[in-house]
Length: 447
Ligand code: NAD
Image (cartoon, rainbow, N blue to C red; front, side, top):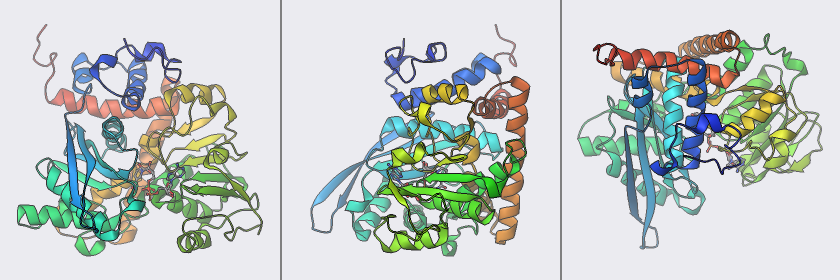
């Protein structure tokens, strides 16, 4: 059987049992599947539903070959995975990063499936990505890369089939190029094929800050349960990109004290506090180096991303990459609440340690679902041709995020489990209903 030799997942051998290492699946995907296996122990599902959710519906690996500015050709590995479409067209972002691989994209597509179900948006899960360091490309090379990738996956996506969106190191501009390329290929206007587009191309107001905002909606709705008084609550944010920045600024606006932030160049810590607004301006004009920026105390300590995770704060917000909190550092986490805005920042082995330490983990599939929720609003606006005011977008987002937060909290109490397992149970309820509505062996009354 599977990864009994892995120290990371070895802590939960019983939960790994159903997964076969011989299937060629990588560690991240198998780790992701462990969460489902744990939830099934609390909320048994029919064997048919389990079978349906076992593997991705389809996976595509492509070579994205482009001409570089110096005239040479270069090939990049690209992927698109659709995990499950029982609840609707599949949906999921496209990531540009040097560590992108099929295992990671599969895990991300798996998480998207459960994320969409937790908040009840009518989508299945998908994900895509290109293995590339965007800092090495010019803007014109980046455009050619994005357009060529869409040419390669055009047959797999579409407004009613699979709808990409931004993720790490992709943004509105990239989505605009991609939507335009799809329209050229299909010789029509299909704004609903991609979300996170520029407003001028059918984007939605409120999409840019939706993931950070949704995470803040969840945390604020649970303040009473978590005994949070914003003015007395310190926060460290790992990752100061789209998600981390908007979360930090909205928490700052709500009275929380941001004391540490970091990005790929490292981080800073000032117990007197950090105002995210001027700090973002500083970052943009100082080649992303945060050190020396205008913190509220005037003086700050320069720290690494690893140091940031271990700071004595109330709330830790991982908003960068996966696998940041592992069995190697979970013992040293001092925060009492972790708001997971990144996808998969905590491994299953670390979950066990965090639970033993009494740390509440607000899981990614709930905490960062604001992005896909407003992507759903964008798609709805594209399909109807009627566009909403930002207040309407934010109000509807808040309602959905708060409802999901309360449901997960109640399920956690009911099943006496951790919050991540409760989120998976909530998702499983909706996925089971949809899969069973297509017919199972019980429905057909077969042995
Ligand atoms: P982004 O590209 O806008 O920002 C990424 C940030 O992480 C940057 O500040 C970058 O410097 C930093 N970073 C990169 N490597 C790092 C490292 N090793 N340590 C610390 N920081 C590092 O990306 P984003 O859209 O903000 O996405 C961040 C996370 O949120 C990802 O895990 C993504 O999957 C997840 N997420 C994003 C969305 C969305 O709508 N953008 C939705 C759901 C989840």
